[in-house]
Image 1 (spheres, rainbow, N blue to C red):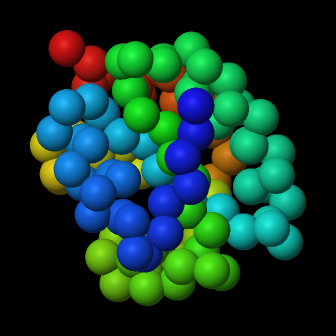
Image 2: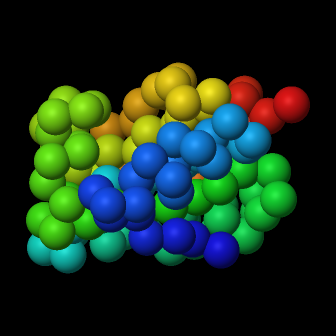
Length: 109
């Protein structure tokens, strides 16, 4: 199941969870065509990795501070993988399900 991260819940939803399981966050916006194209892939990954990784989304229009100040996100979609409170990998732009799945699998276990 995908969670919606906000600036108010980021610490709990992302950073604290990342100490138990890898956390993937998709930074997106409603007006972004590539974001809409990758959304079903993110949904599938959430189902495929349920119990092994946590998948969330953050709308950059509604929550502009964390993407830009904490992670220097300059383009969307941007997908981050965090583990143990630390940024481990970043993917900018459209990516295939296979590429994103490989990224997650590198951080399991």
